[in-house]
Every structure is written in C-alpha cells, then in structure tokens.
Amino acid sequence: VIPSQTPIASQIPADPRLARLSLNQATTQHWTVRQAVDGCVRAGIGAIGLWRGPVAQAGLADSARMVTDAGLRVSSLCRGGFLTALEPAARRAALDDNRRALEEADALDAACLVVVVGGLPAGDRDLLGARHRVADAVAELAPYAGGCGVRLALEPLHPMYCADRAVLSTLKQALDLAESFPVDQVAVVVDTFHSWWDPEVWEQIARSRGRIASFQVCDFLTPLPADVLLGRGMMGDGHVDFPPFVAAVEAAGYAGDVEVEIFNAEVWAADYDEVLALMKARYLTCVLG
Amino acid sequence: VIPSQTPIASQIPADPRLARLSLNQATTQHWTVRQAVDGCVRAGIGAIGLWRGPVAQAGLADSARMVTDAGLRVSSLCRGGFLTALEPAARRAALDDNRRALEEADALDAACLVVVVGGLPAGDRDLLGARHRVADAVAELAPYAGGCGVRLALEPLHPMYCADRAVLSTLKQALDLAESFPVDQVAVVVDTFHSWWDPEVWEQIARSRGRIASFQVCDFLTPLPADVLLGRGMMGDGHVDFPPFVAAVEAAGYAGDVEVEIFNAEVWAADYDEVLALMKARYLTCVLG
Image 1: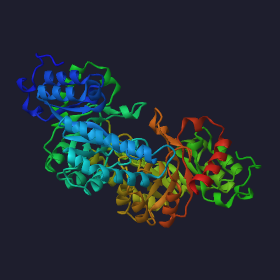
Image 2: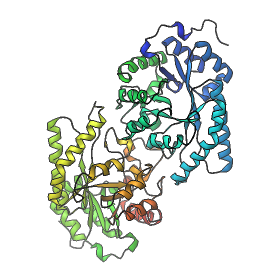
Image 3: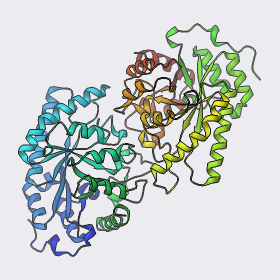
Image 4: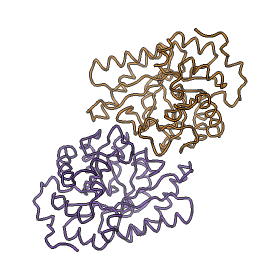
C-alpha cells in the first residue's frame, strides 16, 4: 500500500547538477524499496538502482508502482550473473535465474541488468575455461535480453574478486565480450572502484561508444577492511580521482545516470538520510569536481 | 661467526627437479639469514632470495659469506623501490636508498634487486603523475644498476595494492617501462600471486624475452585475510594454476630460479623446516605439475 501523501520527485526542487545522480540501493543496505524510494524523493534524487532481494520482498509489481509513482528512473537492476558453474544442472539453474532477472528488470523498466559473471567453481583453477563458460552463457542470454528490452551490463570486477566473484577483471575483457553481441543486448558497467587502477581504462572507455549501460561511482579505501567486499567508500574518502571518469564516459557518449554504490559497514550503520545528504555533497564536490 | 660444521648445499643429495627452487626469505619471516641459509642447506634447496632487513641485522659481508660458504645462489634481494614521493627531499632519500640496495645486491651477488615501485603519496590521487615519477626514478637508477652489475627487477603488484604499494599493476606496464632501458639494467618480476588474474599475462610473458629477472610463486587465497598483504598462500592452497606459468616463462627464455615467497600468518607461525618440506613437495606437485 502506497500512502497517498508520498511526495513526487518532480515536485522537489533539486540542484540541476544532481539531475543524473542515482542511489544504488546497496548503499542503503537496510532500507526496503519503499524506504529507499521515499528517501530518494526526500533528497531530490531522481533515480535508483534496485536490488533483486529487496524488490522480491516488496513484490515486483508493487516495487514497479512505487518507483513509477515517485517519478524515479530505475538506473539498473542488480544483479544477474554467476554463470561459471561446471555442472549442467547448476548451469541451467543460473541461466533460468538470469532470465527471471531480465524479466524483473523489464517489469521495473530498468535501464539494464548488472551482471557479475561469477568466479572459479570450488577447487577449479581453469580461469580460461570459466571465461569461456561466461561467453557461452552471455550468448545464450543475449537474445532473451533483447526480447525483454533490457541490456545485460557486464561488470568487470576488481581483480581481487577474480577467484570468487568475477572472472572478468578489466573493461577490455568486458568490451571484447560485449562487442560480439548487438549493442542493445549486451553492454558494460564502468565502476570507478573496480577500474580506477587499470592503466588501459581511458583507452577502453574511449573505445566503448554506445556500450556503457551503467556508470557506478564510489571510492577505493586503504587499508582494505577485513571483508574486502566492504572496501567501497564514500567518494572523497579514498584514492579515486573521479572527474576524469565523468569526462571520459561522457566523451564516450554515456548520458545515463551516475549510480553511487557503496558497500561499507560504517555507511550501512549510519542514518540513511544523512548518507544521502553526504552523497549529494560529495557527488558535487568530488565526482563532478 | 660461521660454525665450521655448516653443511654445504652441494653435499646434500637433492631431487634434481628441485634444482631451481629458491626460498624467498619472507616465507620464513622469523629466521635470521644464518637460520635461513642453514635451513635451505638442510632441505637441499640451492638458492635463496634475501631481504635487506635481516641482511642488515646479520651484516652485509657476513651474509655474503654465509651464502657463499653454503654454496647457495642468491636469486634476488628484496627490495628497492618506493619511488613515488612528491617532496624533493623524500625523493632524493628514496633514490639514495635504492643505490645502497643495488650496492648490497652487488655485494651479495644477487641476480637482481626486486623493486616495488610505491603507491600514491598520502592524499594524492594523481595516479598518472605517480607512474611518471616512477619512470623518472628508474631512468636515474638504471645506469647505477648497470655499474653495480645488478638488474632492477620491476615488480607489478596485484591491483589491490595500487594505492599503497605499487602503481605498476600489470606485467605490460612493467615491460613497457623496462624496455626503455638496457636489458642488463632493467627487467621485471613475474609473480603468480600478482598476475594470475591478468587476461594479458601470457601474451606479456611471451613478449618479455630476456626481461624476466625473477620468477616468484605462491598461491592466491580466498577469502583474503584481514590484512590483504598476507593473502599469499602455499602453492596448492588457492586458485592459481602454476604449470602454465612455468611453461610460459621457460618458453620466454627464463632459466633462473623459482622463488617461493609467501606472506602468510599461519606459515609464519609454523615450524620452518616443515614449511620447507611442504614447499618442496608442493613445488613438485603443484608448480612443476
């Protein structure tokens, strides 16, 4: 049930420089879809990147209605992927799950489905084999994505996650794979945390024209926390120089939203309205620069 | 003082397949040079990679005598580098320290000086600037290395250390830089831990002919420990497929030692004779394959 007094994003006057800012729901880990949508509206943030878990909890149709009623764009749905299983049954289950994720992204009118391709199966050391299985799975999913009108957005993850999360580590790998498919079916994610160290990132962004489906920002912290998944920091708290990324993706033709996706125990423990306020301030000073 | 009863490596019958195995002293973190040398001899290991700290504690001349008397090769001295300082005084100090390290490597008859180039200065986000300062510093040190008859071995570190340890992350970067200098002055390190994820590593090793000064092996563990510096594991305990690396560096002309360098709290807390025994066994089964 959506209260009728829910504010509508377009009624909130917002800094026009914030027009493309999007809250990835992972940043406000403990908010429901309802809370995240309302939080975006209160903060004057016009777009949201949703996650499948909270969407399932809220219900797919209700989630879609909430974002529509609030006037929010859905900059991405997170996430599909995990396509490296060796066993046929596990592989089929993964493909089925990705088809469902594409349908959900369609229902939410999401700009893309973010795809984290998966790491090495337990005990397996054949990295090249895993990469080939990813390519085969993407080939199987791409037409289905086309049918849904949703792009698969392949996300190269930082190489420290190569073993357990994503055997695609660089933008070059992701683009090499994406370019085998129609541009409206397979594209890539540029994420500052994952790619800031990459000496070829500028050349690859420049090459990507039309293939960037999502642009995510957060900072890279040192020392990394005990759980390296939580090393993503608020922009300005780490080592990333953001404005060159903004300029590069714009020069490559990307005009979509800029999602802030922070996995960070301190952020998750904070007051989320304050997180959004800080996120807006840092977006203006550190990202737009 | 060197006890006259110290065994001599050549007197210990060893598996000929172990002929190129080298103990990097970091693996036996708490052993002195004396203990590490004796441990290698007991284990039938013919080479050692020394670290400057324990060498300084033992004395440079005494360390040189110990390895010579034991008949060990010194496969590397670790380490030089940290060449990214912005302040002129800090930069001069780093260059001076690297010249001393080269002199020490010469005195130890080490095959090379391993160079960890350094990360971003505190608060600095200019990654390209840091890389330029590394190139400038290597240009300044290269002729000095030539004069010492010691090669600078540029070590690309895993991208998770880009901010705080090494702004060179890939073998391609290291080779691009090394190739600006004479092959007897500047070369690279191939380290399985740092490069196993790199989709271009095979192509880069193939390109490196004559530029590999050091080949280091250890495994990449997940989950990474709280201190990511200690994520290096015993071969076979992680995700790395070693035999293709051995084949690739040999095909590229590398005929030097294979150093086992493990930073790992459990290994450091173990009995080091047992560590060496396990290291030999895993070298035969996992590395040579």
